[in-house]
Image (cartoon, rainbow, N blue to C red; front, side):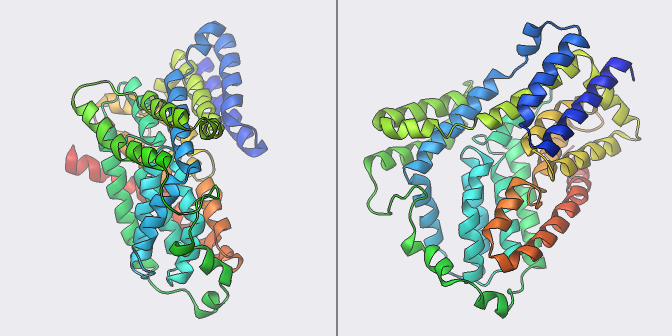
Length: 431
């Protein structure tokens, strides 16, 4: 491998590790590194490096988090959650299924992290419904993973756009279908493995306040809005939510270029006009952090592409053996890194590196990208990821040691099981 591309890749790895270990914002550090490497090693001007920053993704993140931030602040999202909770009646078998579906719906409506709103309620509901907390944690994580590749969610749109810009033929509907089916199967496996009830000692230690706070009849919105009659603003928000997905799907099928970021910004502006004060609070919910994580990494990957480092790395991976084996290695690397670092960053960094393998024709590009996306998300229940840490923190203190051990074992198993099972299956059945 030539010296400059190798050095640029080495710097990428060092910056990724340094930002993670030191707790510095990955996107900002990566953007600065991209500017330095682009000017000194790739012979680019600073203007050329900055032009690689994905403005379209910035608009997407802003639109998604602005609109859904308002929907959460005015209590509409909480109403949807409470209505779904009331349907179970506390039945043990229905509770994890409900939270799987609830997390999937929440994750599909903007940021995958929105599904984490189900964490505190789900982990305490598991005790009331006599469900193993490990099963509930996996149910919520699998639901988030299933919904996060919807056409209206960040992972789905980001993966789709990066793949399409790299020349890989894949659609958001394929990504959603593969992610949903894979996570339903994983959830089914977890239902079989953890179907026994938690111990009586653990149930007796459940604080009374937990049961009261999570009862659907006492539910309140996260921002303190009581669950009384729906306001006009909530009706307007619910109408936007109901029409969002059919509108996007219909527009796409009709041949229109639907920009989800612009659509959601427009809906957010509509809600802000109806309630300016709430709109101002919603603006504070815009997730600039995610925008810069993706933007910084995509900018650096643009520098690597200028140096032809991405293609060189892909060809090196193909030298491992067969293209299928090389693809499996890339997907397992994505899963392992994602268990300890930013899933968004992993997707932004590794999707372009799959281009040489996809271009070889030996591994269908859509199958590789779908597997890579699923592999990078099913490990998010790791105690070292945001999702896993949130779920563990939401559980009663006496459950946390076992949860840490079991979720770490589950996520490490998924590092291998996900790619090894899913990719060959997609290639053999659908290729």
